[in-house]
Length: 243
Ligand SMILES: Nc1cc(-c2ccc3ccn(Cc4ccc(CN5CCCC5)cc4)c3c2)n[nH]1
Image 1 (cartoon, rainbow, N blue to C red):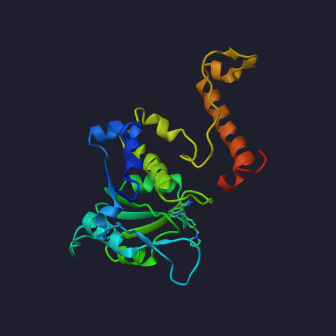
Image 2 (cartoon, helix red, strand yellow):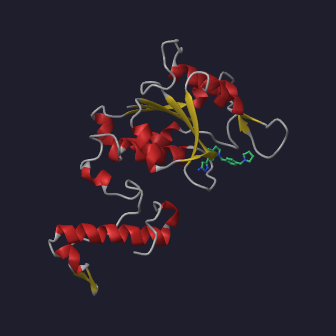
Image 3 (spheres, rainbow, N blue to C red):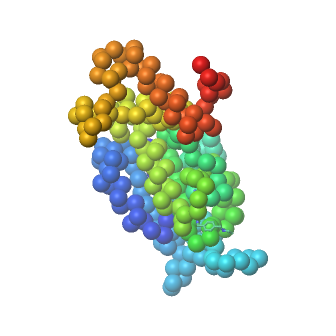
């Protein structure tokens, strides 16, 4: 998978070289390139923002540098490019006004060949950038949660990690991808490891029984109980009913 990130803080993404994804980059499974938006300005001050039409606090990111950056990354769109094939790029802009990023969306995006992330700053990006990009690629505004960050970079880092780890070969043990929170729609069961006693606290005896049928049943019940308590909105229909 090829990932391009457009940002005024390209060094922010250097951390990907040392994290879990560093190995994936070395093995060519994941190719991540950060582009400095200021490389696509032409004035002496490398200006990327200006005051908002209609007034209001703060600044808005100018459309021209974004247009040139996306021209470079998306390349001249020839008619043969289907906008929605797996090979066609998806351009994702983090936004507080976006659709919420979920494990389901992460799984879907992990199947695409080319992702482009656009990191806004200030009060956001001129709306026409999204409109024009949509004439040549699939465009999505995506929120990672109902809180306001200072820009898109942290959101993109979170999405790259959530997506990257679903790519076969990026995570050591693919088994661990199936049995985790949200993968089957429920929250995960609690985990334990040695020692069996720690500060007077025991490991649930079923986990030491070697009875794998009982262990699976206990874990499933833990998932349902935890999901009922913490995230009833995630319960599948009927799962919350008393047994
Ligand atoms: N899930 C999630 C994603 C983000 C996120 C993503 C990209 C950007 C780019 C700039 N900002 C800061 C920021 C500050 C103020 C406003 C609200 N203003 C009110 C009037 C115009 C806008 C919006 C945005 C981002 C925030 N935050 N949270």
